[in-house]
Every structure is written in C-alpha cells, then in structure tokens.
Image 1 (cartoon, helix red, strand yellow):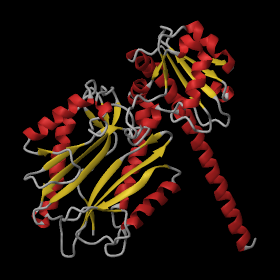
Image 2 (spheres, rainbow, N blue to C red):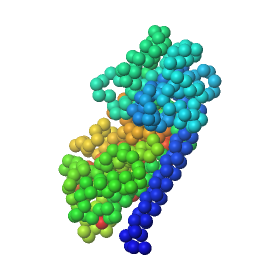
Image 3 (tube, helix red, strand yellow):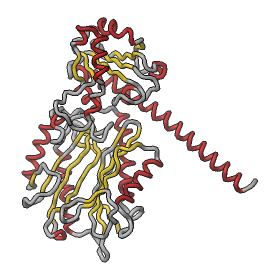
Image 4 (cartoon, rainbow, N blue to C red):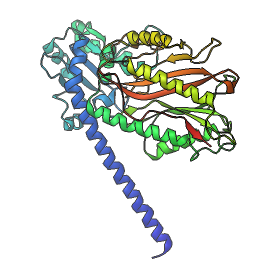
Length: 443
C-alpha cells in the first residue's frame, strides 16, 4: 500500500470518528436538554405562572431558531409557524400544547400533552377561559432598554395583531406581557442545569487560565489580539458557541485601558480577560487576572499583590451576604452599606476616581442561558431586574471591581476585575467551578 493511500485512509477514518463523536454528543445533548425541559415544566413553570398570575402562556415560533427562547421549549425546527401554549388548569401539572410546527419530533421528547392544528386555537382557548394570557412582549418604555430584552420580546408586531384577531375580541383583550414569568422560569434551576452549566464554566475557566500563561504568551512577542484568536480557535476546536469575542485588556497606571489591540504584551503589564462561551443552551461570563513579571522579579510586586488580596476580601464579604428570596435591590443596597462599613469607598463608576482609599463597584447579574440573562440581578444598569426576587438555585455572574492605590503605580489605582459564575441558594453563594484564588503569573 502506498504512503499516500495510507494517509488518505487515515484521514477518512479520523473524519468518520469525528463525525460519529459529534453525532453521539449531539444525541446526548438533546437527551439532556429534553430532561431539563421536563423538570423545568414540572417543577418551575407552575410557580412561575402562578407567582405572576398568568393562566395561559402563548409562544409563537416562526421556526429556524427565530424565537429567542426556542431552546427552552424544543429545538430549531425546519418548518415555521409553530406555537407552544402552556395552560394552568389548577392541577399540579401545567398543560402543554403544541400547534403546528413539527409535532412528530416534539412528541418524541415526551414533554408535550396535546398536538393540534392552529385552526383549533380559538376553541382551545375558549374552552380553558384564561383571564390573563402571557405573550412574549416587553414592557420597556425606553428606545434602547438593557440588553437581554430580546428574550422576552420575541413576538413580532404582525404576530401580535394576528394572534389578537385569531383569539377574538374577548381573549385578545386579555394579552399581557410574560416578561416577569420568563425571568422566573429561566432563573430557578433544576439539577441537570446546574451540572451542564458547571461543565461549560469549567471549560471557560481552564481556557482563560491557559490563555494567561506562557503556553500562549511570550512577553515582548505576543500581542493582545494573538490571545483573543487563540481562545477563539480553541473554542472552535471544541465545537463550542461564542458568547462574545474575548475582551483582552490591559490596565496601565495612567488609567487609559487598552483592549483587543495589536499592542505587544510587555513585562510589568497587568492583563485581564473577559469572555463567554456556550454549549447546549448555556453561556458563561467570566474574567481572569494576570501579571507579567519583569526581568529580575521573583514574585508579584507588593502593590499588585495587595490589590488582588483586597479583591478576595470583598469577594468574601459579598459571598457571605447574598441569598435567594430577597430582591436584587435589597441585597445590592445592603452590600453597598457593608462595603462602606468595611472601610471601602463604594462607587457606581467602572473606573477609578481621585477620591482617597480603595474603591469598590458591584455589578452582579443573572447568568446561565445568556451571558447577561433576564433574572434577578444586583446591578444598577439593570434597574428592572433589581426589583425581581432572586429565585432559589439561580445562576449569577459574581462580578465586581476593586480599585486599590499602589506605590508601583505612583499612587494610581490598580483595577482588579473579578467575575465568576456561581449559584445563589438559600445558604448563599455556592461555587460551580473553582474561583480565582491567586494571581496568574506570566514570565
């Protein structure tokens, strides 16, 4: 056998192996996703609908992944005009109906009870006589509301008018926003969600820590953009989705942050990355902090080490004082008070000021199926979401910044940007991956 033929057979066999592995992973992911939907429909949806006084929830899916929540209900169909209808009929189980779409595939999941033609919608609704019908429309009044709004604003103007017409005057007048219902349904997690999200979070952590090491960075040669593209290549190799392009940024003493540039990484740099990746409807949002050693240095300079240690103190303060069951606003206000009592200066700015002392900014937001998800948050830029109660077992981006003056920077403040992905329970914050406990060092 010639060498070229042998190589061709080897490549072909490797390709088959890759395809078979992908098929196995896809099937496994689908089984897990269906299991998650089953548990969410059984245990979370009844509470979400009843807590928000919604008797029926109608979602129109135009197909091919156009509905922002399609993965919460099924998968991207090839046919359009499917409809999911969830009805609270007073039983423990919420009734789940599918109109149109691809019922054969959805029936295999075992998650739906009724499969009907869309022509039967009006009689179906009339028979159940819901007083409040939730649909995916936003209550936002501003032209540019906070990100994530698309998740609960998936109903188009055309579909809204046509739905009202299809339901008739009486039931068409009972349509209300399902915005808060969606926030509650998405936020409270079942066991399989915690397992799946923790897998993606651990991959994110490991890739970030490899990126901020000498495996990837050679001081004086490697650019910031080189690090960005290394991360994206590793993500692609693993078949993971992009949350957003990596944010690789330097924090120089003059306070003028440099990000995602062709600037070469140099000894003495304080280097940080913000990145999120996705798999099977879960997306992370995480940061890591590193220092590039100068020639002759055997340890991290004292001022930079102190800045990181102060961030750990703030982390523990937050960790001890956040629980499920209270609103984001209650808890954020309490944290601001505790930060001040601990001797820090609380700031709403994400950059240092001229005020004396160590400054702290807290911006903890809902996470899980989207980097910035729509559940209860402790973050001023999401004012509506601070009014939501933090649901039990919800994912949070444990995010804050500490600005610490350093002699090495002539008294300027070093920003340590912390972001971990965590679970909020009745006990408090619980880690779902190993947090950063020490500065990553590049030599």
